[in-house]
Structures are given as C-alpha cells and as structure tokens.
Image 1 (cartoon, rainbow over the protein chains, first blue to last red):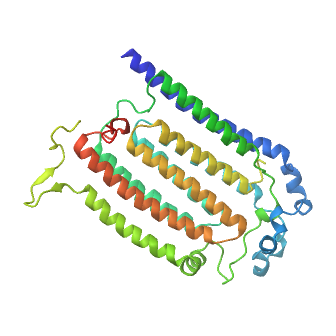
Image 2: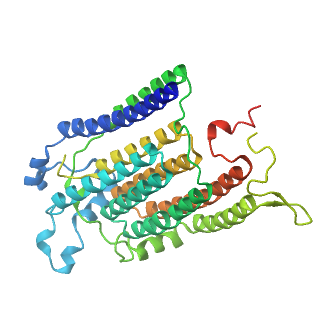
Image 3: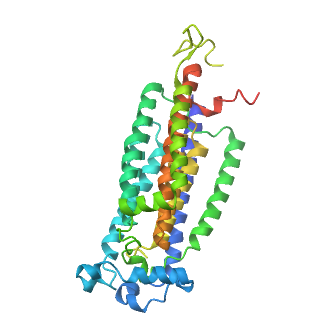
Amino acid sequence: MSARRVTLLSSRFVVVLVVGLTLGLGLGGLGLGGAVGVPSAAAQAAPVAIKPPPRSATPAGKQVSDRDVVTRRDAAGRPAAAGKPATSKGMAIAFWLFAAITVAGSLFVITRKNLIAAVMGMVGTFFGLAALYMMLYAHFLAVVQMLVYAGAIMVLFVFVIMILNKPEDEPYATTGRAGKAVAGLGMAYLIYRLAAVLVSVDTTVTAPQLAAPATTAQGYDWGSTAAVGWNLFNDYLFPFEAVSILLLVAVVGSIAVARPLKDDDGEVLAADGAAPGGGA
Amino acid sequence: MLMTIGFSHFLVLAALLFAIGTAGVLLRKNVLIIMMSIELMLNAANLTILTFARMHGDLGGHSFAMVVIAVAAAEVAVGLAIVVAIFRGRRHVDVDKMNILKH
C-alpha cells in the first residue's frame, strides 16, 4: 500500500516538475528575447522610430506592411489613430489574462484525476483560445471554436465519461524506477531543445504588428465570416469538399464501431457487461 | 516585452500548449485524457496557423484552421466510438493494459 502511494506521489512529482520546467523555461525565453530586443518603453514612446520589419524586404511583404499601416479607420473618419499603436496596453492585459486561462486549463487537463474536472479545464482552455483568436482578428474562427470545441466536442467527451464512469486506480504512466529515469531524461532533453528555440525567439514588436489588418481585396473585414467564406469557397474549395467526405465517413464509421455487435438473427454478441472473459 | 504584445508571444504560447499536450499524451494512461491532450496539441497548431495568417495578411490560414477543426471533430467522434467499443469488451480504458496486438 505504502509503496504504491510512494509511486503515485513520485509520478505526480514528475508531472509537476516537467510542467514547471516547461513553463519556467518558456517564460525565461520570453524574458531573454525581450532583453535582447527593443525595450517596450521605447517602443511605446516612439513607434515611428522602430526599424522596418524584415518581411518588408520581399515585394509581397512590402505590400502587406503598407496595407497594415494604412488602416481602415482612416476612411471611417478617425485619422488620429492611424499610426499610433493605441491598442498595446489593453491588448497586453487581455493577452496575459487569456494566456494564463489557457495554460492553467491545459495544466488542469493533464494533472486532474477526476475526468470531469479535466473536461472543465479543457473548456477553460478553449474559451481562452477563442479570446486569443479574437485578438488575432479571427472573429469567425473564434466563434467556430466556441461552438464546435466548447460546445460539441466537450459534450461528446462528457457523454463518454458518464457512460464509462470508472475511476482509474493509477493514472500516470510511469512504470518502474528505470522507466521513470529514462522518461525523465528524455523529457528534460525535449524541454532543453524546446527552450533553446523559445530563447531565440525575437519578441521585438514593430508598429505594423499592432495596427489593425486591412480589409480583403473584396472589401470584407479581415477575418469576418464573409472574408473567410470567400477564401474558403474560392481558393480552398477542394479541401472543403474533402472535409465533407471525411465527416460523412467519420459519422458512418463511428456508428459502425460503437453499436453493439449482432449476428444475422439479431442476437447481441457483445453488449455491455455480457462479454465473456472481459478482462483478457 | 510585457506590455507590448507581438506575434512571437502568440507563437510561444502555442509552443507551450503543444508541450503541455505532449506531456499529457506521454504521462497519462487514460485514453480519454490522452485524446484531450491530442485536442490541446491540435489547438496549439491552430493558434500557430492563425498567428501566421495574421502575420502575412493571408486569409488562407483561416480556411486551414477550419479544416483542422473539422478533422479534429471527426477524429474525436471516431476515437470516442473506439473507446466505447473497447470499454464494452474489457471494462477499462487503460492504454497500458491494451496490449493484445503485442503478443
């Protein structure tokens, strides 16, 4: 009994350690990147003096950044907000809030023993992600995210959890001391490589990044339903049709897999609890 | 860096989400938790795609994210059907005990 308890405690410790390391190194990477880049105070004080973004070296990038600078607000009669990154502070607060919600929810998912608690963490993650999509001007995708993920998929998960309704006795997959050591070493190496990438990320924020995106060539708001629909039905029509076939196959397949097995006379072969030698 | 949010913040957050999802897949034994972790990783990829779409001013990323969401929904439907079918015969959803194909 006590040995099992020790195992459970140490595996929980491994989870906490891995996650803590990931978080710490990730945030450290942000901090280092920020220290290398332009200080944010200077970026706020003189947004015009920031060097041009590197992507404007290409002709396409130049066109994009030009459209970024000339915002739609000009035409709407508010020329004062044209070049000034007025959104930075509120956007920063919103970003950190929703990023915290997202990360906390996903940590909830992988650490909770109670499956319903894990699903609730997942819902929090999806709401945070929808808000982040809004911040990226993906309004339509944010709503789709909430409808499909936080609505449909999570309800599906809750249904299956309620059907199964079985508490797990040992939730974490770490067997033996050697296995734990190897898993820990591998995970540490993975985190090291990931952190190396994160440290090298340049967090310099240029003025075009803060400007609102321009309208599409058809005159729709960027990221709106009309714009995404135009893009989907013109440039990506084949993937759209392929997805419809995929959904049809998935519907038929899931029904075929999940229904009880019956022979030709309609006799149930393997229904709930009727399977002989169930634990084999 | 703290009060000015650029694209790299979103990308780093997506990387963190993906790492957490990977840790969930590797560390947990319950199939449902593993599937939720896979959803986390798909969402991290979506966040990256949308950030790049915003970076390059290309709406194709939004169409891609739509496709990813639809594929994730189909994957969850089929995966949960398989989980229910397995649970019917074996009365557990522990991946460490699902090893009949190994022997």
